[in-house]
Image 1 (cartoon, rainbow, N blue to C red):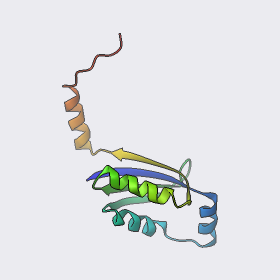
Image 2 (tube, one colour; image 1 turned 180 degrees about the vertical axis):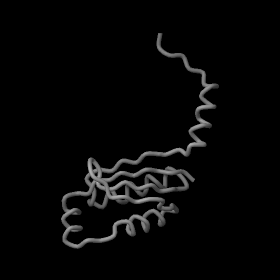
Image 3 (cartoon, helix red, strand yellow; image 1 turned 135 degrees about the horizontal axis):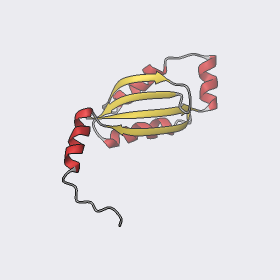
Length: 107
């Protein structure tokens, strides 16, 4: 299983609907993530470029992409960004593996 950071911005219509009728979007996100075999690890409303940041664990990239497509096609978002995350241990493994990489920089 891999971790993913999803950052989303709501459309103006979605913001209008949430102001008129406040609702727990974490519950909606959890249901969507779990329906694709994942697990919601964290959900935060945010200030700035994105309105929400969440961390989810999925069995594979296809499942994470399916979530992005499902919520993106709903029309409730104006922007979505998905980033694959690595644990510290995975990062350390990558650093060790980099030693064996055969790369020549441009001369």
